[in-house]
Length: 223
Image (tube, rainbow, N blue to C red; front, side, top):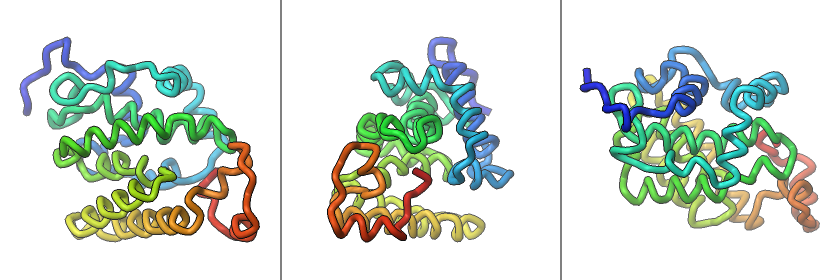
């Protein structure tokens, strides 16, 4: 067992609640015991309301540029189970990249945290801070890259998920292969259009004729 953290390095209580809600026991075990796929990737109005009720104030703070003390990495960012550092930063990424999509599903504000989330992730990856993370945390640390409308970040996303698929233990191979497939789908859309057409309406962008054709049957990824 790692030594207890000093009080000034302890993970903020609200960050702990975010990580527990999103990952259950996954940070301690590497992957959650329960199947959380519906929570993570489904579109549930009930879950969206629950997230808004429990975490809405922190989502709004994060989108407004607050919670800057959560950005700090090792050693000041708080420890996750197993003594792994950077828990507050991971919780902030979840607020920006995941909970905002739940709270504001189908609205412009669903994407309001993307730029900050991508910056946080870019800084962490530049320092190779992802190397210490449990498998499930790596998936969601890379997820903001999948949501980026920049080709270079999409290429990075595919590269990181390819590494996950290659390195994961046998029991996680199928899950990682699925994440890699979605990473490639997102990259292919950005390669084709330079943006995600399903965001155009809520962001006030005019869709091109090829985009309108794509939107008839193309994926909307829950938005």
